[in-house]
Amino acid sequence: MSDSFFEGMPLRPPVDPQESARDYMLRACLLNGWTWKSPRKWAVGSPIVRDEESLRRILEPLGPSDVDSLIRATPIQSDRADQLCQPNAVTLPPWSVWSRRWCPACWRADLAAPTGGRAPLWNLKNRFWWSIDAIHTCPFHNTKLNCRCPHCAVVVSWKCPSMITCSGGHDLLDAEPEPVCEQHVLADRYLLGRLGVIEPLALPILDEVNFEAAAVTLNKLGTSVILGPTYLYGAGDRTAECMSEGVRLLSDWPRRFESYIAEIVGAEDAKHRWARDVLCNVFHFVLSAPDRDLGEKMERVMFQEIFRHPVNVERAYEIKWDGGRTR
Ligand SMILES: [Zn+2]
Ligand SMILES: [Zn+2]
Image (cartoon, rainbow, N blue to C red; front, top):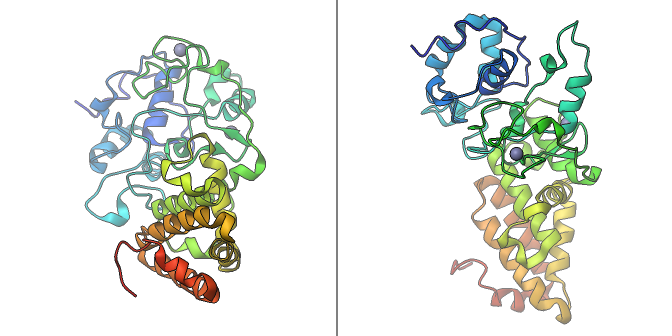
């Protein structure tokens, strides 16, 4: 039955604390020369495991501490919102459902690590946080997370037959690390700090907000700063840069946010249309912020800055920023 995943599998590599259950099972298949197929049967084909007990039964041959480690890094669906998945109660939407990502520089470091006489692949590992959509870079190497085959450019999915080949059989280990400016990995440093992967980066205004809401807030505000009124269309390739700008905007709360709003509200005529659109977008986000307490804190700053610029108050009211809400 479904708990015999490891039956007949001679090699059981040591579990790494950064591996989720499916990361580990994918690697175990690679090292044993098995094809990774029908993973749904083992309850880990989808990133969201629906039943923790059956996953525990599947992993049981590994021993209790390894099972606990894998469960901690595996998103598990539950009726209780605070346990939707782990670690750190990351809720469902931020987990990548389909594509598989990796940091080519992490893999190179894995392959160069001592193996105690085993083949270099013995140390090659996936990290659970590569599967979190909100994370775009590797702060250990300042590189972009890769999701495409270096040969055919096809997006690598969890349906690929092996950890290191695309669906066309090309070698994913050939992927070159793509450097990212150090300034642009700031958001991922913050998010990984929250997940316990690296030293936490304090951002008090966001620290009490759940992981998903924090990521969305960094994205929306940072994109607004960098891309201005076009931000509703998303930041695309510049997402890591924009989210990192979100970290800077919310650090030293509320000073930088205040200055940003003051700059928009105080914009002179030439910039007025631009400023009005930005203010409208930011207000729209703040009023529907994924965390109500956070939304209210930002809202207070925005009103305070609007009323500090009496000349512009009338213009501010022209904006349909509150969808008809009257104050
Ligand atoms: Zn890396
Ligand atoms: Zn390929």
